[in-house]
Image (cartoon, rainbow, N blue to C red; front, side, top):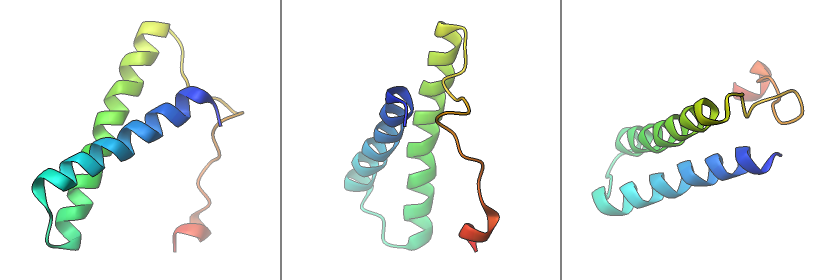
Length: 72
């Protein structure tokens, strides 16, 4: 995995953890929404990084297309 992809993954996880500690969700749905918010922060950071670099940080070497069978 590329260092930049790893950094954005870690950012999303950390932000999700911090939001969860602050809001203390009681249900799965609340936790799911917090996870989406943490992921959104990481996504915005990735998009902004790509804008500054003038290139995508995702490429064939660090991205695997989702295998739908694994998500069932």
